[in-house]
Length: 571
Image (cartoon, rainbow, N blue to C red):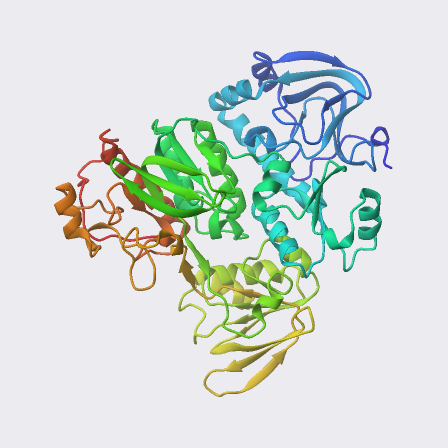
């Protein structure tokens, strides 16, 4: 057990532990309360929700994981520093315990007052947000938070891990196959290996093989709604398009519900670095972009529901009903479908056998950590494949980039192609396809073939990352809106149902409107889309203008913008 009193204040190497200025502390003190605290006092515990924002005035406070059990110090804060991480702003539970290790005085600031202060002081807001995002990344990196115990070969274990990773929830995976502590931990909790996977929360609460919704409830990530029977606007899909629509709609007073089956961010949320997004010259990770957007949307009143997978869309006079996986439903005057698209799988035997244990469809810091010092392969010729290869090259021994086409720049941004060519640990295979997966329980190698010469080569790889085009998330719509031959949603006057739309409504469909009046589509799910984050964000924001029109609110003034247009592009 580590004694936090033996630790000095944690150095601030990365900006995660900045010190507040006296004017900033004074501004926060206007709505806060000064309190004397003694050594051993607990400010909040792991699992607590709705706790205050604490500034250390004198003395020291430690952030401790597994407090009172097998505790370990995460960080120690002295005068001028503040306690907490991203959950302060998102309303999630605390993932550690804050305990006083040197008597002194603290300032307790209610979160509502904190929001008021940072709204008026942009510099303070930027400082806090950067620190909170960094602290969340550090918690994830050290495996703080809850535990997932199970076999790496179990599909349910993979599902739980994916939910935790996609939602950026601090956790630690304890592998029954490889971790000698796993069975000891299970025996202590009275859990048989056959009952795994299990989730352990706060060191004592055990849930056996929970579904995603049950896991979210266990750790306090609760779905919330507006409480009314009819919402103004429901957004299905919390990728860049859905997040942008939520921010703009809520900021303009539209009662907005945002749903997603798994996590915020969509495919963009799994991108390790987006370098060509306006306003971020040094790049930003997809997860950070999603976290920032969610904080904005919640600030304006968006009601977020995750996990909440849509299973059906029903039309009624003047409103629409979305049926959800848990049997509930939500009704709204207008709907935006922003469910995006998922990467296609390789049509190979045994592929399901290796998914989650050797084959992946996203490359995040966690996958990069799993593949440290291994040889891996990435399949795909677009920007997502390039970003994955560059991320993995930082930790893997070698990255084989397998591209069916004959050029790096055919579907990839030039700046990414240039970086790949300059990275010695990336070996590019053009005009090449994967033909066979090799391994016993885990992936050991792949057989690739040059499509022109027919030459075959066996590559010893421990992981294969697949980014080979996308299929839209529209199977749940069951003929409710018009789709193109590939399953993407057709919008605007291009819709084959546009004539009947005019006969029904007396107007042409709006640019992003589907064949059903009041139902819109934006982002990768829309036919004719450009698969770029910035374009998806633009469409999400544009959709709000048409929602205003549909609701009869008029909407913000846009010079020379027709309310009815034809054609369109997508992101």
